Length: 301
Image (cartoon, rainbow, N blue to C red; front, side, top):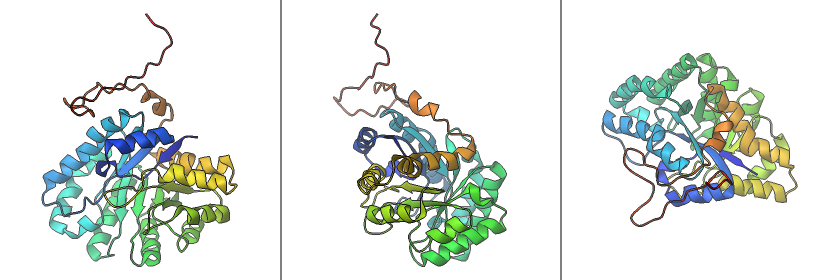
């Protein structure tokens, strides 16, 4: 079985994680722009970060046969520095139209401040103008209210719910998200968001329609193999292969494929791995490591 992780912060992960994900069947992923753990102090750091998502990180992923996409946006926590947020809004159009950018994200609320709402609305307008899906981060605190408010505002800004992926759902929010026609994404993240045994029960109760599973693995205690591990657990609990395929692979492609940027044929094109390749003079190999080179032909000339 092959998997699509539609939310994982590979910038925070080691190259070993790429190898493990490939071995577990992950063939594609989406890396949303996010909070790095400490405040960024200048616009240049945002510019370099966005460039890395469509440059080095995409290359690093390809060196393990995984197709890399990303979403670009101003994270909710960083919206509260309004002077810097204004500058970020000016450069976002330079990145959201790049190849491999499949949405505006992850955006939304953290502390649900007026500044967060201001830039959330502005980025919804940007996504609507670009015809891109939106990936919404829902807050850890007061989640139900934040999720409802996120959906209300998306509708007020004229977004079609089918273009909006509401992330970090739980048992408290899923029913309303689905009832209102939005996509419901679930993050399997130890201790804080969702456990995969709970996820099994959600899928049993609600079925696979408009539901997708991700790891959101980042610099915290998290697991980049959360998607394949949850698939295995669903299999053990008697959920059908087709339902598992929908929530761990196909639904993410259908939702983010509305960007026009995802072609499953591209998943195969990154399988011809040659780790001797370089990106701007750099390789994924460190001193003394030998490159892996996969041959795609039985013919020996």
